[in-house]
Image (tube, rainbow, N blue to C red; front, side, top):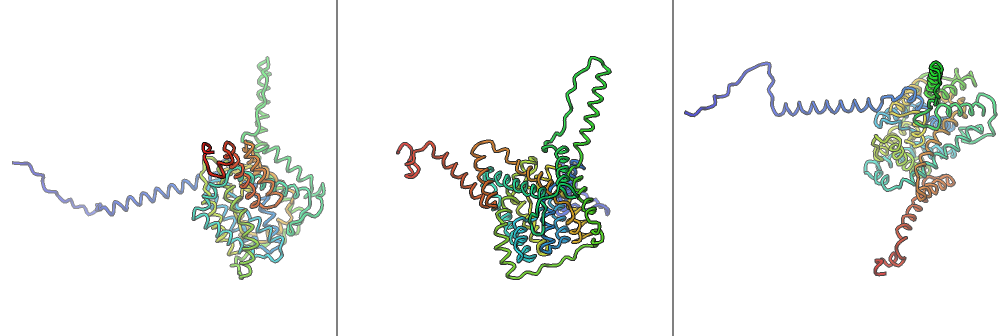
Length: 487
């Protein structure tokens, strides 16, 4: 008789859960969601962790040489809501630092700011309309993938030319800040700066020398131990070793000082010393945030005079150049022109409706923050938190303090940011690449237009490639489309 399996016996357990395919799928989904959430949390922690406490704090000051003069000038000249701008840009800093994990800057859009300062009829509605339209265009270019295509097509030599031009422009502006008195609301120089005083030339030179001594040229390994000859006597050798260790310790302390942060704190102290009454002008509490009212005229004027000049600069310097520079400075990180274009677009599509200054990323700000020690997203997140607190606590009354801040010190910070950005062009090793980069730089500086410099650089690049392609071919094979054998 063949053996048969016994019938299955149903075990009844009121506390046991029935395992069904649906429940198993739900459990798998729950585990996957938990794993995904854990990965996201770990990535956020990695992006925000400080590589060096003093270095990240110091790096946060690297972008203020550009940020403060523009924001302060627009606040005083065009009644920009400083409190709202600080709150929104602070949030932008925290978000971008969390997303990218590098000191990704948030800077005012310079072309729009320049137009607002030079044209009295270009007020807050026009500024915000220009920012919304520029942000919308960049957002569309990002989500459609067109920005990534542009990034791949633009040669490195042209990008380096734009970076060199922008860096030199920052450096030249910084020298003007140091040498001459500045009327920031009118964006004009007003005579030579005095040698002595709380905003004198000597103060700027001392700050400049202090930063050079501490930071050097920005090399990774600052300072070195002196080579010591061995003494015949063991006691003498120990004395030499002790002296060397003492000297090395002193150098390590000096070279690890947060130079930019110290200089900025000195500027804040001097601002209160220059005008004691500023304390009574401070009002605590955030500024009121209101939706900006736009007219058809504001939209039209903002597009023609703001968006059109700003768009090429935003594409080249805020997206393409930043993407290249980020890849150079942080090889292990993955940056895409698409994500940068989308973040710039979203910042302006949200904040400009409430009166926050149109903002973008900037290669100069990234170079400045890297120069002074910023290496992680925690650097800009810290800066963003400071902006957010100041915007909520002091609001627009902070402008009274910034108005007394020594402009010469801002010039020193801006100078190092500009030089660091300009030095990115040092990898142009071939003569052809240097030729294209310098043509792009020359036209950008003389014409004061990054778009014109970019166009001339692209033309020079194409002509050089065409020349190299035709060097070994007879002219008739090119125009008549014949092979060399047929010719």
